[in-house]
Length: 96
Image (cartoon, rainbow, N blue to C red; front, side, top):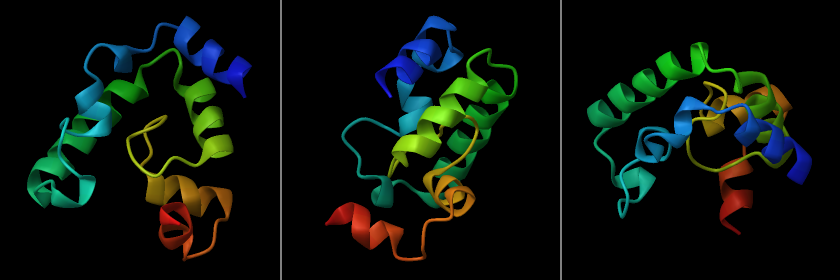
C-alpha cells in the first residue's frame, strides 16, 4: 500500500497544492461544514481530479484504504465505499 501512495505522490497530483480543498477546512469536523460550502468544495476538487495525472493511482489507493473523509480520485468516501461494495454500515464501522 505504501508503494501505491508513493506512486500517487510521485505523479505530482494537484491535490498537494491546497489540501483543504480535498479534505475540508482545517479544524472543522466534516459533519459541521455547511452543506452548500461542502458541495462547492467537492465540486472544485472533482474538477481538479479530472485532469490530474495521479487520478488512477489515487483512486486505487482510496479503494484499498477506504478513507472516511476527503475527495480521492474525484470520489467522496460514500462513493468509494459503494464502489468497493462496503455495506451500508461503513460509517459506524469506521467510527468504531
